[in-house]
Length: 440
Ligand SMILES: Nc1ncnc2c1ncn2[C@@H]1O[C@H](COP(=O)(O)OP(=O)(O)O)[C@@H](O)[C@H]1O
Ligand SMILES: [Mg+2]
Image 1 (cartoon, rainbow, N blue to C red):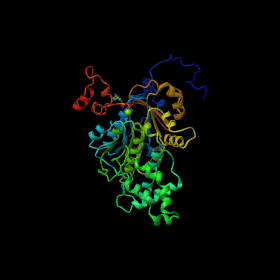
Image 2 (cartoon, protein in one colour; image 1 turned 90 degrees about the vertical axis):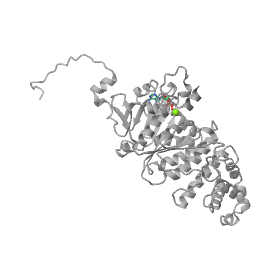
Image 3 (tube, helix red, strand yellow; image 1 turned 30 degrees about the vertical axis):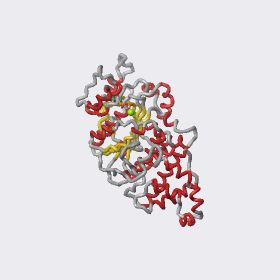
Image 4 (cartoon, rainbow, N blue to C red; image 1 turned 180 degrees about the vertical axis):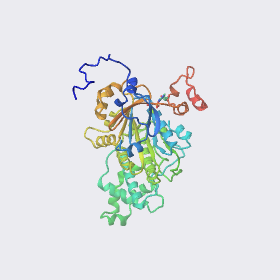
């Protein structure tokens, strides 16, 4: 009723009130997204001051996320790797496992060692060898399919082109011949490409001579793994079996240096080797972390493999974490309209959680468009301090500051080499004598 005793037409004369967003978020909690307080602790929610936690599987089960994959982008030195490492070791504490299928900078080994994980170091002249054709726990047909895809990817990388139909035929026949051995290796496949089986060729309506000529380029391409700059790494029986029960497995590829082709080939092999293990249905949830992923995105065969692995991730309880400098790294994979660009766009679409650390101002428009940022969110990106990121999930955003424990910092520190030891104020509770030597 309009004429009620308490009705008044008079406007309230409340003075205007200004406060920081942190205070206002406390006063008007309904203005911020609901607290993200399930999962491992990441740090503090900068808008509410409350804890900020994250668990992609729990959020996926609750219907907040459409997939468990995460994209993390930010300029160098902002704490992307530190965040990924905290997520890794804090998740291990609650029973998850972590794979880092390629660490080009060699900064993950101390993390794996700290949690009792395994570090596989690959590089020219090292004694470790992985046979990417190792069989997993799958059926022979699945193993064969995985091997064919791997060999095709390797050949495409070394030849720098897609394979022709006859080459696929020659490769499949050569692998079938090599598979008469219980654990075939790449040199076995090369031998079968050079001297194809006559009966098998005839059964496919060809001849051994034709097959040999169809497979000539392939044999040369694959030989790079046997005689070239990757010799001794993937060309024989494995010296190490993958311990799937290890809390963390890191493939340290830092000895490959800046050789991009070698990195792509090694990652392709390593990826397949891990894939066989990841397919083991043991009910364990796993993070697969691609640090410095912009380097991997330069290789189309590898981008294709990432895509197929991501498609399987939900079925295998895997959450992928892809770390880039900027979203335009995804555009740099190929020309506009190319297959690589379409796959890269698909990878972004398959990351339900996008965490953005500080961006250069020239990246703002593209980042805002790709992530659907609001204007204030966009303006924030150039001002984010180290360790603070904008977490975008479907329907909600958070600004979270990652809290790094001093013990974590001692293991994660990538700035050690940049610090002048004579002026260093960084206190390491348990100084590593080797590290000191490097710094001095
Ligand atoms: N949340 C944080 N709090 C305090 N220091 C941090 C934080 N994150 C990172 N750092 C420091 O910044 C350094 C660089 O971080 P890093 O994760 O290697 O950056 P990026 O991977 O983005 O290049 C680390 O060695 C650490 O000393
Ligand atoms: Mg890093």
